Length: 378
Image 1 (cartoon, helix red, strand yellow):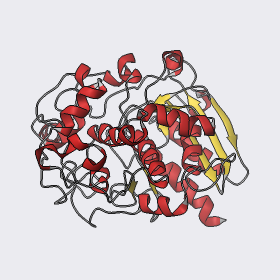
Image 2 (tube, rainbow, N blue to C red; image 1 turned 90 degrees about the vertical axis):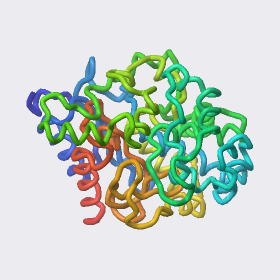
Image 3 (cartoon, rainbow, N blue to C red; image 1 turned 180 degrees about the horizontal axis):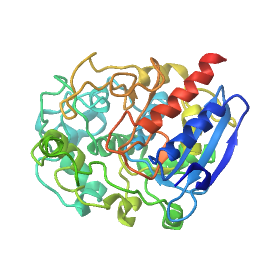
Image 4 (cartoon, rainbow, N blue to C red; image 1 turned 135 degrees about the horizontal axis):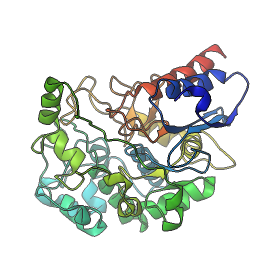
């Protein structure tokens, strides 16, 4: 497929053409099939593009599952409750969620939980997908899980469990589920398409995910062997990413029951324009709505994991604030001060074709580089 055959739509303000060029290049290289990208600058939307295909042309009505990009949405929801005085990052999790104190976790703080230091990467025993999709079941199992390492002694990526841990904190202090909180406090006021727990009426708009995170068919034997060790069922990465077997299976994230459930670390469904507007509203007012004030935003985006500390699940160093991934070797973003959360297969901007990565996707890097080049030149 050539660039001329790909349908593109949307808008770009004068001076931001470099982003459009980078976006089109992602299709020209064959890396993208369907995707969208949006940019806000100083409170104004300057880029809003979509292009390619899913099972139909990829347009401004198309929705996409965004994997761990969902964690950034959940982190914003938590920060909003900190801002309202309902949560305190320095308080013990058990203060809000008494059952969490089981298995020696009574002193674990909200900050340690949000920065992946509590060692709760998966329940102790295997569980089914159906059990994982039932909120009360999975949060009870996680509350009664023994930490995989001494709390505070290191950090390791809670790939899927993070969402239920943070989401249960939201439910305990607010009374609403994280999905309802996001709908009523973020998506509704901003007028954006953003769900954690997609209504059935919106399912027809979702572009199916193409491919898998780790495709080993035809892979170099040495690479395949390395991946099998790294992601094996007994490895921390394998347990975290597969939740002890519950999230193992081809096409799982295209299932309606997975879309409908609340998985606040992994099944957010949105589009680039909505996500960009949400993040812009953490910086300043957008259409009269500002989600975070500066003191709380600065707390949330400040790196708390030690510099250079290897991730106990992902091996290489990762950097976390209060639920956000921050600027570091794993997540360069636009440089120091940047915050957010990438998703599996390239979900920083929004796309339907998976690449074999959890961060550092070449398509997203091109877009970020184009954006920063425009800002640096202004």
